[in-house]
Length: 292
View 1: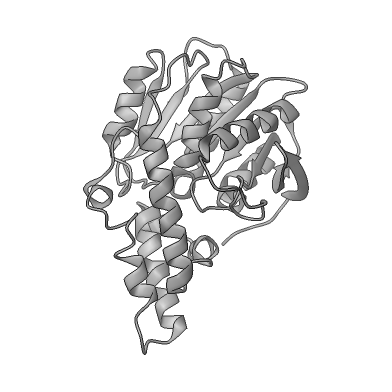
View 2 (view 1 turned 45 degrees about the vertical axis):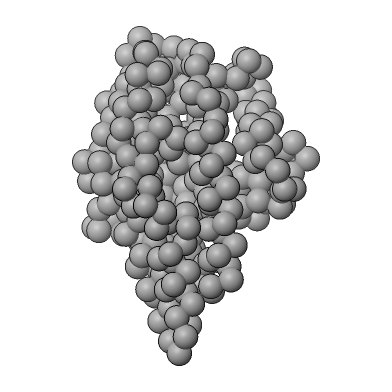
């Protein structure tokens, strides 16, 4: 179940985009959590709850165009995402450089922020399920981004909406989770609430295709100097492990952690592992070794 606990909520504006921010109070440096495509900041609640219990300062924001954030204008999204995250980092690094943990699209922004020529105050990064350097056969075949699965399910005529929603939820749960024991259907329903109609599914998947093309076309990031722990779920059905392996090679000092039972969203399958890695970097941001 999605617990609320000590998680607070507030409105903020970054790079001209109004957004919603979830946060927990605690000791610094602040850990900034960056969600993936089409997800809201709420996808980090399992991690935020554990940070609250540990007394660790942390914040998760809705990225532009997702969750409760303002919509974005047409055109390339990544440059706006970069500027948005740079202002998030600046806001939360007043006392110490932040640690960035990102998933999927958020992982791309996290790596780009660490490599930014602006020399952002980033103490360490944890990119998880990072796309751009390798996709699974499911994605390469176009079954996800072209929408052949989800739009078919959500558009079946004569089938009650509740049934279509249930089938969509089960499909998304299989795509995001790797460990059925960790499956939280309340979280899944939160993440799929906007794709239970054919029209909304088509709109979202059209955005996904554009975003995939933009991520694929982006040059390989270089110049990451802060401590880096790359995390990948071995059961990821969207991004191939090869993508994280190539990122590991590109960031020579990085550490690669493969979670055998996790899927595309390790923070959902193994939130405690993500918490431990993030807190390890927060406690020793410039150390020579990184947590396993």
